[in-house]
Image (cartoon, rainbow, N blue to C red; front, side):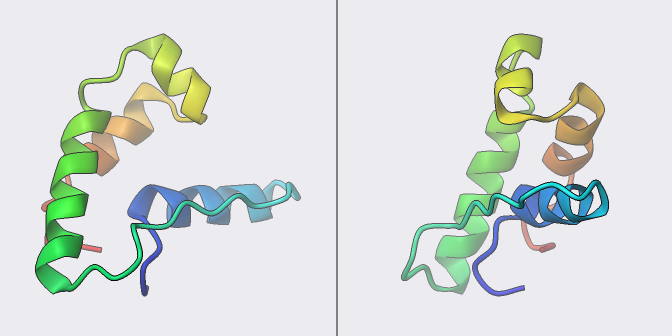
Length: 76
């Protein structure tokens, strides 16, 4: 999946299904394999710490954030 973040890819599919204009969120450029895994671990852990208002701001439900946040960092 290249450098797309996991949440971005999931949102892209849902936005396309809903006929909305997609918004992509990429991992920082130039990350190697270890850097990408660290980025995933950090962002997924952060997702689990967001409150309801913050999740609404990024357009995710608590269930979506929990599903993404509980994935192992090595899975894309």
